[in-house]
Length: 178
Image 1 (cartoon, rainbow, N blue to C red):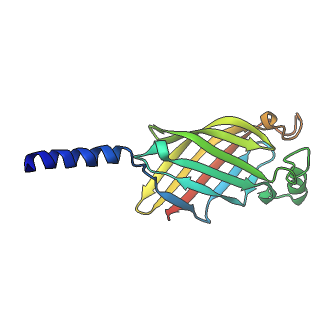
Image 2 (cartoon, rainbow, N blue to C red; image 1 turned 180 degrees about the vertical axis):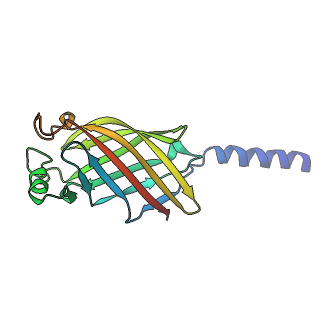
Image 3 (cartoon, rainbow, N blue to C red; image 1 turned 45 degrees about the vertical axis):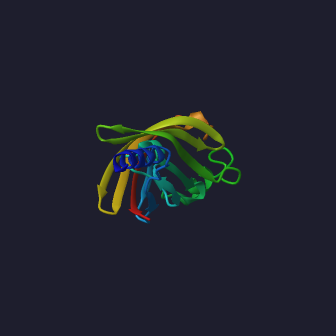
């Protein structure tokens, strides 16, 4: 009788564990993050960045990045330029107060991970792939990388010889396990 019960019990545990959902680790974004944009002119930072990061290197299928930047937190080092960036022509901060990125898929890469998702600026969404370097140590991690954004894809400003269409975004996001 024992010979039948043990294999049956093991089979029940195996089958039930196949239907359990695994929740990746939730991470809290720390205050020392850095979100920079660079071009010939303008360049600057965004001071207000927040969101949810669920990440587990062993369970990328259930991992997710859902982050946003407060447009009004732009800082170019020029107060007049900061105000202009929030006007209807540029980011239209009154109507679209946030820049959002939500991942839909995460894959491993040789240097970390690749996020596939939608970047939403000024009410327009565009599929955006972001290569991310991941550095983990104990209960802390840092996600960092660079990617380019063509502001014309999102209707940010008008074509101009003085402002390049493509801006380089650099980010470093330190996090701690919740």
